[in-house]
Image 1 (cartoon, helix red, strand yellow):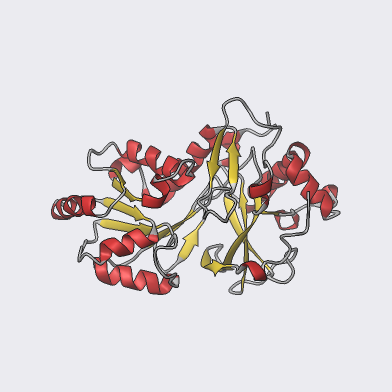
Image 2 (tube, rainbow, N blue to C red; image 1 turned 180 degrees about the vertical axis):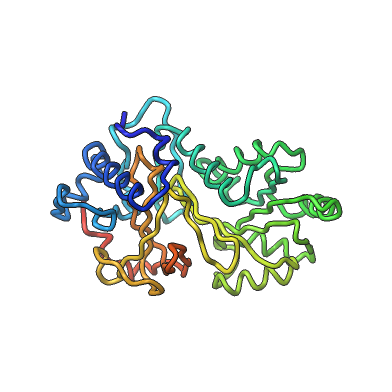
Length: 328
């Protein structure tokens, strides 16, 4: 078992506490995660000289496709989450040895932004995710739907079955969260469904090859106009993480206290860019204690002065720098 108390992760209150905990997690994962240790060694990094979380090496997310990224090997009751992929792609796999940590993370993170799930009807329009095994997003919303304890809450494969329910909830002014994969929300919006301010509409990204990709700003403009709502919320998470950031509008995301985003230089992945400049997103997710908490993603983003960030898109594969630093 790792030497850190899991509860301490969710009690981070200050920058100093975050830094101290990040350093402790880094040293633990360096010693107990074979894949991460090999990566850090490939950089010739001196573990003993790392004094701040900005100096910690970030594992390229692609290694979740090729290697087991886990501390101290697989446990008997582990769960494997996998990413969606096309037939030509290798899916990422995230071995979660203690599912309770994931449940704590997504429940606490959700409640920080939206309050108790029991105060909401939660409707999840996630066809692509529901049609495959191993989705961490489906696992999360299954628990949130059950915690909402509302008979109207549930998953939906098609928007047709949603339409009547949305109208009833609209007429009763019931506070409702409608989360959907991007293309499914657009399909629904084009059927002339209008909502009201009792609805939170949240997109979780992804056209999944069904539609042409849109800029976030353009997508949100369309959805706001069609649904007649004042803002579109977003969820930022991924298979390889156990925490999520949320945006309540304008594409600006907030992280929970145990999660932090840094923006690396596109051409020099071991250095960072200044605020309001675009670069690659590095994520510190302290809840990922049994795996790797320091991940260099393939997303592009921009950091704001208050620690919030904007999601700008994804790297083109030909533009990725520094992801082949290690062949193991």
